[in-house]
Image 1 (spheres, rainbow over the protein chains, first blue to last red):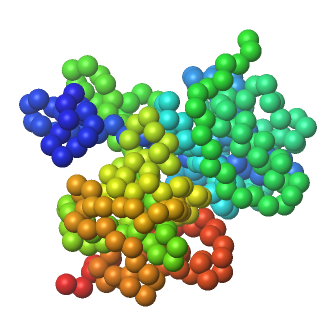
Image 2 (cartoon, each protein chain N blue to C red):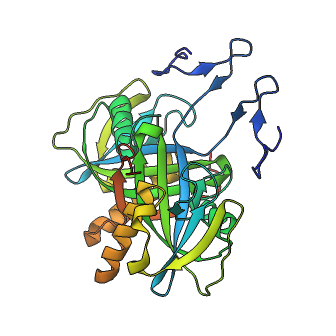
Image 3 (cartoon, each protein chain N blue to C red):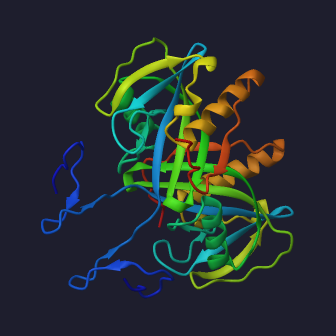
Amino acid sequence: MRIPEGDSYERHICDDCGVIHYQNPKIIVGCLPVYGDQVLLCKRAIEPRLGYWTLPAGFMENGETTQQGALRETWEEAQAKPVIDDLYTLFNLPHISQVYMFYLARLSEPEFAAGDESLEVKLFNEDAIPWDNLAFPVVNETLKYYFGDRKVGEYPIRVCDIERRPRKKS
Amino acid sequence: MRIPEGDSYERHICDDCGVIHYQNPKIIVGCLPVYGDQVLLCKRAIEPRLGYWTLPAGFMENGETTQQGALRETWEEAQAKPVIDDLYTLFNLPHISQVYMFYLARLSEPEFAAGDESLEVKLFNEDAIPWDNLAFPVVNETLKYYFGDRKVGEYPIRVCDIERRPRKKS
């Protein structure tokens, strides 16, 4: 670890070849897939938060757009192919150096299935959302915004900070 | 380069210790600093695009929010401390695996100076913008949106793809 010339931060630098391995925040992209009055959630088959419900999302890969990444993850986790609408939520998670983005997305048919990383994939009405068993605060926040905004019929983008993960009651 | 167990992509994996070095898209964050009718631009003192004008922006660092990164870069490059308003533009640049975000920001005083990475920092009226000497397409697009939106008085977020950098005339 040392500060490269002209830089202000310590970086991992290879002592042999001098290559600087920058460590930057990672982007997680996902969808809020909507079918009629229902939203699509996935029960996680992997850690962290195995067995808890989440929106389909995952690490953005090189060479893709945020939308392409969101659709790829939605396919991988929920075997669903929604149509993307607007960017809806963006969360800063500085304590773990992540930026989460969820796109609003519409399913034209209720076609989905559990991918490798999901135990179960299911459409939920608002009154059936498993609020106590959601995997991550970003999922909770995105769903809360959505059901609130749906009453008004407008879905402005929400940019929020989540400073740390609140402890769940066991 | 090989595909880790449970993954779908080739990764750099250390043959000695097994550590996987993921390569993910990088986030560049910046501001569109506005003072009255004018916007603040920086003339780049470094490559790429040395001598061309840009909005203050740079790679987001671990442990910060997108807004904190945008303000840090604005301080480093333009020695200015604007107040951040809304997220304004988000660009996918899949060919170079980058995601750019610009926040609208207001300067309450015309206080700024060239930081280490800038040759000159200057406020521009719309009719003085050096359109032929802007550093990057994302800067051009953000400024075009801004001056268009200003006529209407509304600044909706813009999410766009820039597939490749157009060649500039020499």
